[in-house]
Image 1 (cartoon, helix red, strand yellow):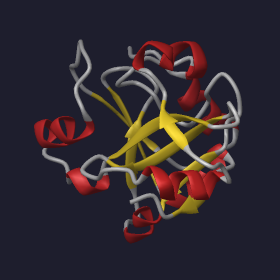
Image 2: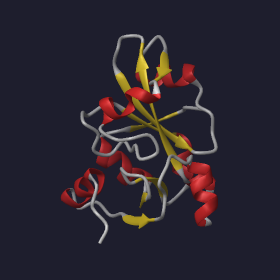
Image 3: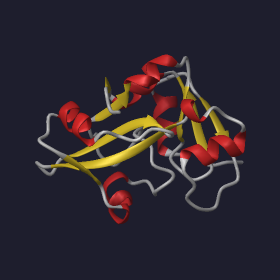
Length: 155
């Protein structure tokens, strides 16, 4: 029996449609390698990048695992002069999740969430389930409903 994560509990409480996939993973592996390992489309697999803005605010940017984030576009979406990636050592303290298991659903605090516009190309996207070895499949609109997020141009 696999344990539910905070992200899964939130989706269930809100009665939002989703599917969960469990796979073997003991250490951080990026979204592209996980997708390839599981025979999934890497373009449909989305990663969560945590950033800190010039103001000190934290933001979650969710984009295709294959893509590079444009920090200027991310800053513009967040209404910041600039944003920088959060240092890896701070991810768990800020989000409650570890690197590789970080999802914008159910973080310690309700940080602003921005989902790259490319998500609209898919009926279903794949995001981390909140722990290494878990994935959540859901529609982009369901993801935004779960996180209170919005679409943004991030690449």
